[in-house]
Amino acid sequence: LSFARAVSHLYCSFESTVFFYLTYYGSVDVASIEDEGLRKATELQIAHFGQCPMQLFYRRHASRKSRSNRRRRQTLSEYLRLYDMKTGSLLIHTLPPHISMTKMLSKTTVVDNANKPLLPFTDAPLSYWVHLGAPPPGPHAPLISIRLALADRCMAIDSNGIFHFFRWAWKPEFIEEDLSDDGADSPDDSSLSGALDLFCDKGCFVAQRELFSFRNIPRLPYSPVATGDFSYISVSVSKTLFANRSLLLVLSDGDGKGGLAMQLVDPAKGLIKGEVIVPSAHADRITSIDMDPIGTASGQGGVGGELAFVGSADGTATLWRFISSHYWPLRPRVRMGGHLGATIYSVAISSSLGVCASVSAYRCCLFDVGNGAMIRNFSPPIGAGNNYAAAIMKDNDAVIQISFADTPAICLSTLGFLVVACCTELRRGDELLKEIFSLELLTLEGVHIGSSLLDTHKSPPKKIFSNADGRAVFVCGEGGMSIHLVSTLHPLAIVDQWRLGEGATDDNSSKHVMHDLDFGPTLSRPVLAAAGCSEGALRLHALQGIGKWSNENQRNTVSSAVGNVLALPAQTVKNALGGVAGMGSRFVGFGKEIGKEAFSVVRDREGGFFFRKNKG
Image (cartoon, rainbow, N blue to C red; front, side):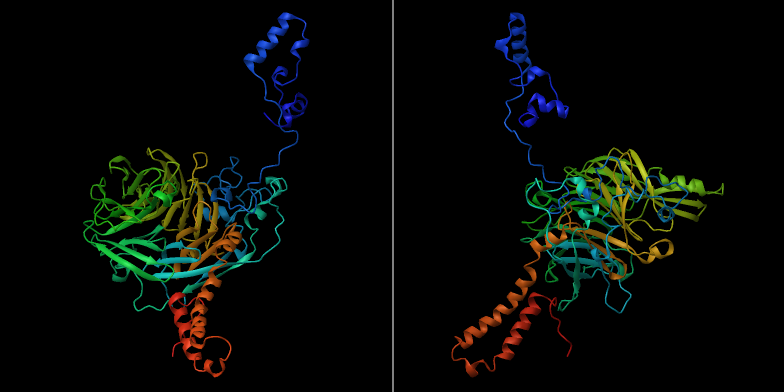
């Protein structure tokens, strides 16, 4: 408007950007005005009000590159259209208290399919995901914690405390790019449909479970499920790579008596590089652990590392700081209370907000990360669960009790919201008539914003975490994963769902449980989603941009691995036999030696991804 071709009064009249005529350069000849008063008034008008700068460009600018360009990786918020104020992408706008979510989804309660944008999980083609089941025989323990690492690795921990390692690759089907690098030739946002944006990458997954040759099974130091003490295990895996960006930090319950176990695990080789247990970190068993990156790992500058918030059954929580270039801490930085000795169910920490939260049965406490001071505490809110229980209550003697759910699922959004799971019980004396679980959205001031009722047949969610900008939360539980909007206008409205099976409804949903979810290579602009499921299964889901990212980051993994394997045998031949001329019979006898060396290199470096040793 200031320097372009629309500066002239003629062009502005067509584009409805007309200013007062004296503000355009050259629009009036002051010297030709004969009236002295009018000439002085014109000069004063120009001097005090100003004029548009002289025109510099006489042709239209090249259009800016489209935000939906297939060459650009989108964020999760852009996938789900979370910044669309029209909320056209919401699957469910309101959920009546007397109708379950499954029945709502089974009916025509979604927006019009003609106007509904495509969603990355619900509308994904079959080639965009792969399901890796556990090898026979079964039954197998569920994968309760999962983390994507490096360019093609995935590490998971099951409920028995055993580590599992996976390797994946995306095999693209290369197609000719029809978008030029010139911004003027790139189409605008309206010309690219949702299918082109989300599902333009053609290809399929190639993945397998790594079976390394190890003397001892890599596992956690202590497994409460194996000993039969408790029904779940407390474990957390860092998002930051330690020791020259090659090892993952794993925190878990060390001994079931308050000890904290720390392990450094190599996801590429499937080895535990270091292990230490800090005894008596708490007076009772550790119930929940949450970790969040700090410094360079979180994009904020400073020394990279992780902050860990550990909750215990003794009613206290501790804050630990792990720096990637320093030794492990042997004592916590801050110890926090506030629960009057009640068991802490779940904890959450946000380094960007500088706030951590801990939840017990009837109290939620917020603390300052810097000094450990309690900011505030509040009781469970009265949400959708109470309304549903009141609607179905037929016995006047029944009593409604509301508490925080006994689950490690809790989330702190970077927008300043807290998402917790609540349990509403309908009781007659000591008899439990009905148990209802719901998600509650609160501000950090403790103000209740809204709630979302979970299916009546489901158990409490297994895990809740937020995306990078805090606009949505991912809720893992029975049947799969659901994405809820963090908003005061549509609190916890469902945006998208990732179901583990077509029959994952009602009674069948208990057979398909998603325990954990991770996005890679980064949470802000992911190209892959990995889910740890029941029966030891891993499910991978591709997102927009995986083809280009795999071509840039994974094209050398297979070739370099094969090249390294064959490099040493080739050098052996050259050193032993010399030049090519006159080799003759000298080559005979070196076959077994070369074969043994190549096999040993493959076994040590690749761990069975390309080859597998047969028994006997």
